[in-house]
Length: 246
Length: 246
DNA sequence: CCGCTCGTGGGTGTATACAATTCTGTAGAA
DNA sequence: TTCTACAGAATTGTATACACCCACGAGCGG
Image (cartoon, rainbow over all chains, first blue to last red; front, side, top):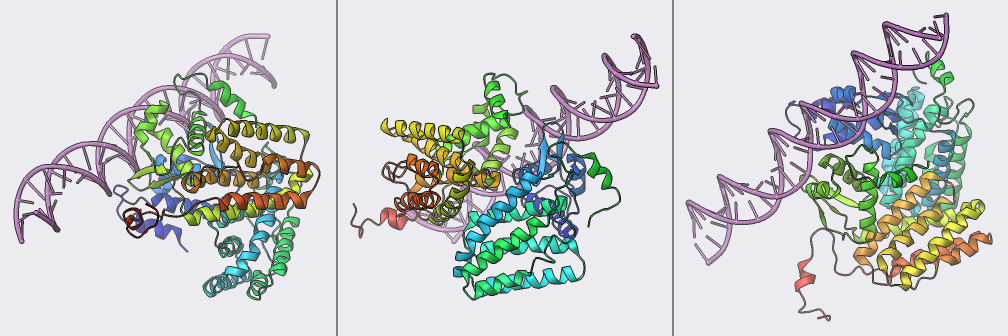
């Protein structure tokens, strides 16, 4: 969809911010851009430029950046500003380990609480994701994959858990942006539809093991070579020249 | 990583805020006040008053309030300001269900990764908590109980998970503030030291079941009667005609 | 006497101004 | 030529000012 159109609509008049949901809009736009890899890890996020881009003052931008920082999608260094987070290999490992623990643990109550509406929405997401992959639209595919996991977690009807999974899924997109090979997203690690079949059939244990191996498969496809932690590795930065993103 | 010490060191000065970590300071002070029930659920948190209390401008206060809101410790209503969150019964259930899922799942790697230092710090927390309970210092006891669970989660060496547990523990303190009977904290639900013994002995499964029953016990001690969400139900408040209690 | 409308005040939402800090580029000296 | 020191620019951190919104209360009409 067109984030810019939405922005334009709500900004109809450039007057004062009567619209208190503008922050949320900006947050969504930025996190989506990060998840879809239109913003790459390490990219600087100057407040002024963002403020001008969204036609708000730095105040609003700062609020969003702080939130993104709490969610570990951006990194804020004191007096040096914000940039898109670049997860370390350790962070990457933690994120996927957490996902294995949490998402697998949720399969039970997901099977118990699955409704027709859940199922239909999830199957739609699977179709969209397949289509995106078929079209080679990696950006959409990544975003939809994360959306699937997040939506699936919501079936368990536990808000703290589903929110946590949502954050982990977002962070995973960052991890894949840094360490992922081109097909890390889900091409070769099976289809998300499979787990829906298992859940629909009430096969909780098999759903759990499916999710476990699914996440393990993604994690194993990551390539950690040559990225030292903490210090920005100029090797990767110089190598980034030619490729916008893949 | 050892910036906490720096924060503590710089705490002495109350002069002008050239300390850019003042936000963190304020955050800790406020969350601690909430956890220790010095601030009660529903209490208003006007920005001006807080700004004066901490001797900063509203800007800094707003930043902290937004963070606390993201962590569900305070509720921010548009144009109506912030107040200490008042978890609904549903939220309370979700929080404890999430804790059961997550904290139990962490027992395995906690047992694997437990070090001498972990153990000694945890045992110290247990001693402090016992002492607080013996002294009838409920505030400290609550805070220390939450600290124990948070510290224990850190043993699993997974930052996203331990952060999540930390947030859930904080929210639990709020839940107890609203629905807890006086002894909900931990008087009668066993001693935290027990799980340390189990973990030290490598009894993963027993540690898991201990944690499960521990959390279930706390949850069962909650009293949900008479506090409906949002609107206080005046039927229950004034309708003492039919109610046995009077 | 009760209900409705309008005015006022407390408090939040946003923008802007100013101070502090970091980074960059240049000039000078060994 | 190279390293260091300093100055300027750019960007963030913080405070303040002003506009807006909602709640409460007074005044008016039914």
